[in-house]
Amino acid sequence: MLKFALISVVGAVVFAAAGFFAEPYLFRPPPPTSPSEVDGGKPAEVLYKMPLGKFTLQVVQRKRSVHLLFDIDVYMAGSANFEKMNGAMGRAELRDTTIREIAEMAETALWANTEDLETLDKRFLAEEIVRQLYQTYPMVRTARVNQITASVSVRE
Image 1 (cartoon, rainbow, N blue to C red):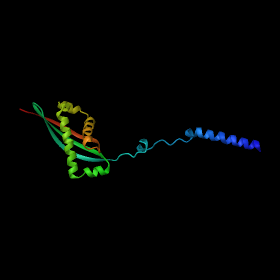
Image 2 (image 1 turned 90 degrees about the horizontal axis):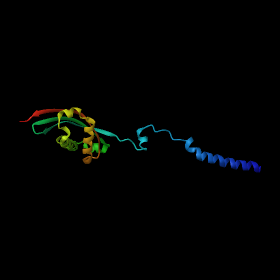
Image 3 (image 1 turned 180 degrees about the vertical axis):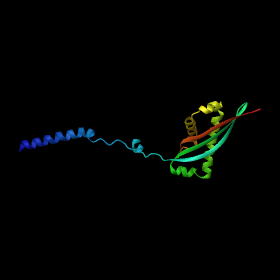
Image 4 (image 1 turned 90 degrees about the vertical axis):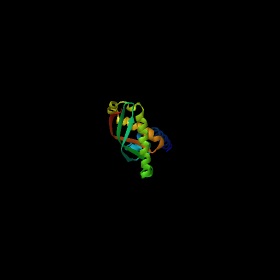
């Protein structure tokens, strides 16, 4: 009877130690299946599309004027932020800020030649617009440039 008790206690200790050290290898969590699980359980942000429409800019240079036509959509995070900005005043403020930032970018050397505009990456332009908008409107996450059209007129 003493041998049986001794073997039982030693066996229980050995199996407990084996289970303790083998547990991470035997019971692994399943791989993440959704993007929110990959981010550490943080739910994915819902982005709301706010089309700003088409607007035209005129960049006056020495001997010519460049007319730029843009069609841009801005994507915002959070329904409360979208509701706050979706009114007439909020949309107008966001549109005016976007136009101001694009005008500042257009007056720099970014669009010195209209030939460069044809090869300009719309994704790069959208990233630059979002960087500038994020300073004023932190709820803006991304933007999409749907259309860019340029025409040049010679000044006298």
